[in-house]
Image 1 (tube, helix red, strand yellow):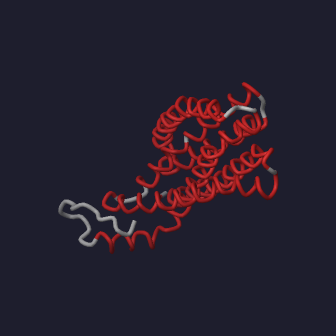
Image 2: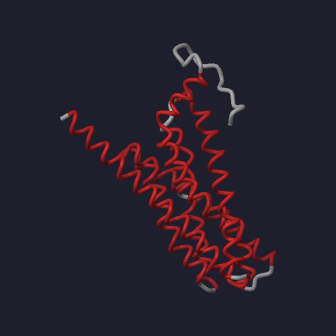
Image 3: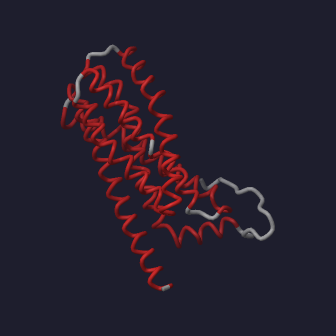
Length: 234
């Protein structure tokens, strides 16, 4: 992130991009922290699913590793892109009517939908569990466009490279650093090897709850700001 260099800009751009970025971030760091927390919660759930689904299929449903990998691969191939495309379409639609609130609305919708789908996958049996896995992968896929594009729309064009670097750095540390290890920790310390599906469920639902709470707080803050702005201009 620190080594990233912005390309040359047209006349009228900031003369010192590093200085301009530091000043911008100092003024708006809370906005970025909230967005990173909301998107990071979604990534945490996504990476927990990615790391532990095959193990859950083997230990809970008796799949051999090859079959479990093939089933999960087909689910991701079908439901992942579908979720991304739907999430992008929803983001565009919400942005036309809700403006800067759109990313948090899509993230909240994604995480709210993912929690019951996770229950269906982790607690269901046979085809019901696979249907839950499809729904879970699709629901979490909705969050990806909102996370990546949200940081772009809140940042001036000349600073978007640095903002993206910051977002990707923090999102990766949160998602990969917390999601998979949390499932392992819960399995080792609480549920045991035979109940890895409960560890996975706990990590997913916990991440979703945190993300929804952050999104709700941000949406309430933006709504209050809009009301104050309308009151001042009236």
